[in-house]
Length: 231
Ligand code: CA
Image (cartoon, rainbow, N blue to C red; front, side, top):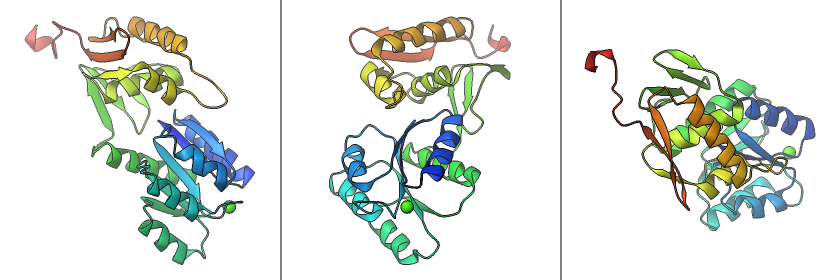
């Protein structure tokens, strides 16, 4: 998941960004409302965390601009304690949730996970493909209860493919989701990571197919079974 964080307090934005990255999410940070308007409208992010008090354009203007342009990503507002009126306005203007400062990072992370689930129409935090099971809350991939250790990027790519198991994930959308401004993820890197994952998953009953000229598709390998009972 790629998140746009718009917060002008440098210490707060840094702390939040690091926390989000530890969850395995990609984060782009902006410190002013004007830039946020344009960037959020590009459709490159899955979710935005938007401070209300921002230089140049305030968060409310940014939010209205996005919604007016048809931007549908979930938006979580960060507000000061005395901005009750703004919070109400914000929700009316199309925000999905808000958090009052100061807040604890774990609460922010839990709310983001909840927004993500809602956006994907899911109620639980586990996705599955064949016998592979990915617990999104704990960032843990298991196969019959055995933990599969992956790097954060390998895990992020696995998540993208598992979210759409059985369907093709376009290569350019993988590039967009895996990149940040600081670290570009090229089409070549996608190939490298897919190659690595194929090796990791070789004996785990799932395959990643190449759909030439388009993208990748993850699905249970043919001929695998759900357990020894069916063998
Ligand atoms: Ca602020």
